Image 1 (cartoon, rainbow, N blue to C red):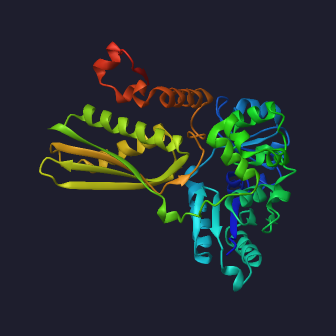
Image 2: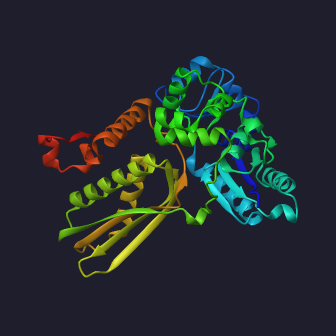
Image 3: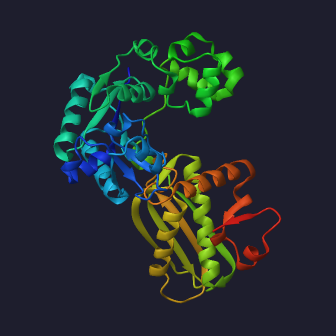
Length: 395
């Protein structure tokens, strides 16, 4: 049976939400992000993109390129609310939905063409989302996730695109290799140095050539370039959680030790989120007392993978949950409601320096291990004063 996969993407999502609440922003170049000169652009309107502005660009540079732009400080909680509203609408209509990020969904409509017609179904669903939320949305329909995602990009803004089975290679051929989801800056530079610019050139190459140059990653890029992708649509509820727990050798009420341990667990979990390109929407704190009574408390949060934002939430949960003043045997932190996402830090609050620092720390951790570099909050006071043979600490 031929698969029918839809990729939906809310157009300039953050900007669109702000325009719902403030119609004076419609038609103007809009920048979402930190309002200070050291802030970063989290999202921008199409009007701003025409000046060369893009997400993750320093706000200072964006304003030089587009001085008439309106800067709006982002509100992740507001965006999460609208994201969940769209998810609910889609979930009411489609039996199998994967929430790929805060503004993207994959829908598996396989078999539904016998009853209604997948193209007609997707178009009516898109109209319902627009009607009930006021948000512009685009979609692509094809036989797999890769082609559908690329088709959505070609349909933007606020458009629809179908790629029929058997026409995938022809659709992809004239497009830039940048359109392939797995091609980042390093892969793009390598391929360009090989003289590869269009997907058609990749299609004409042999798979073993890509394996020799780029390993298995190259083979996956080659398959996507040829319109091949058998990855399934994973239902939202199937997304796994991640957690860490620490059982103390001796039960304790040492607040510095407890908070330091929590911060260390957050650091490790948040690094795992960023490494696997995920965001969490729910944080749970667990405390087990010396008498083995166990208590948990959780909070829904705007999707994030920022150490600083998550640590603040965990410490707030700890202050609310730890009320018995008994010795603690175990503490744990759990992230759930995970979705795919590339928002490396809190682009609405962090500065370019903080973003650069965290990215540098992640690169060091990836190469040398998570213990090689840590935030100062995760280290004992003595370690901060003495330093260490291998550990570098930042506050």
